[in-house]
Image 1 (cartoon, rainbow, N blue to C red):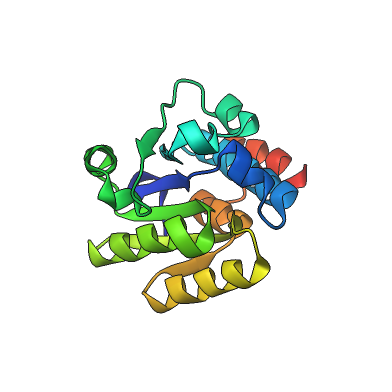
Image 2 (image 1 turned 90 degrees about the vertical axis):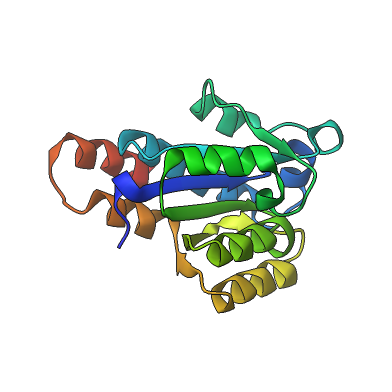
Length: 180
């Protein structure tokens, strides 16, 4: 079970040109937006990366607007763990459960998830918040990430697992987000 105090949301490379070319891009953007908004309410920190932003563009505006002040870790390695700055920031949060979202599922998300599992983190792949340019690569990436030891979840499943109870101000705020 994931709890807010032990969890971090990692959003990998949801960037302009890349985000436009993946399958189910609108649904991915909507699910990711809900997840980010719920994480903010639940005080779950968000770590953001960008793969070679000069070539692929910056993080999409809809996510940037939800994460004011968040500076993306720029990287050139496919695995986020190949970046010393990423590893420094990840360790600074001192969280063991990592919700993983982003693109592309079969490249950067896959390599990062495998590395995180090998480093001993509990990886939870948010399947409605990952995508690739083809459905085949998206599906293959999810299967290989699960086989490597990650748990599968969805944005709504993770949100309610983090929330735990159906009462209080947090529940009311998150219920509005879910119903949108």
